[in-house]
Image (cartoon, rainbow over all chains, first blue to last red):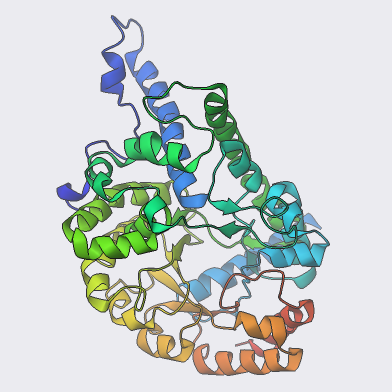
Length: 56
Length: 398
């Protein structure tokens, strides 16, 4: 699949971490942990709407 | 008992996978895609199995155990109307609400002027398919979700919460269903994951068939761009649900992208170029795709033959299975081809004769799986399903 076939928001993403990060003044401790959990839960929401479309 | 079922499961898995790889197993696998038939057999109404997935699961397991099939789908009454009612989806005829309790659920495509995606909204979809689905499509297809820009509501908030939690509980329950099929009757879960073609998504759920056909003439560039925008998402969703052991295929439901629903030219320009790369990427990740070719797709066998050997399993519905076998049987396993009308209105002898004809014609070198042409609903006679099963078990030994 070539670049033209990839939309701007990647599959699996509703609200990119980069966008969420702008709302957080400062992260201390483990930023990757916060990012991973954000992305994992965001992916659930992504799956919800695409499964509504595909399976229901 | 546990040891016996493990052994049986292993035999069945080997049989099923061998056939799907287009090789010759010990005998022809039997893998009927049974939906509301399971309700009839287990003593439930269509309403019960459509609205209560635990009853649907139990009905499948009863059939799997009693008929002794090699593989089944965990629940082929795939639309759980408990969930669709919770979300407020408008496009289903629900047994017991919109239609009789003993009729299978119906998809109700809206009239062209009420299509869930308007003809001037292609750019929105192309720019951000996920955002379009949440912001435009879902509010249109749900009676509860608020439109963008309108005040939110209690019902709108609940639709998301209930829908999300219902979907989570339903999909998680499939894990247990698959375990029970394995432990109770040694039965393989036939497919894992879901795919539809970008073109079919536009026709099925967004523009409607009539709207899309008009778009093919009025705005073909937009149609192509929309299909291309959908591709990575549909690939992602398919792979996310795929069998981690890479044994069973992803289920690919093929609807109205073939001749005569569209012209050969439209298939060549829109349907196939935006599907083929998806299939290739899925195969590159080690997964087969079950082309559940509803209707007659034999006009496109040459296109399907472009795919790598063994990358798909080709299911035959109304098409001539002998022609399909001649065209692509050397590359892909074939399944199906036993007419549903025969299973509903024929006699067991007629069913046996037909199964023999198909087996003699396409199964000689392996690479064939016994199944009806289309999803088996509650009009199929129990004795005919029994005849199909038992005949294949006896006659289909290599």
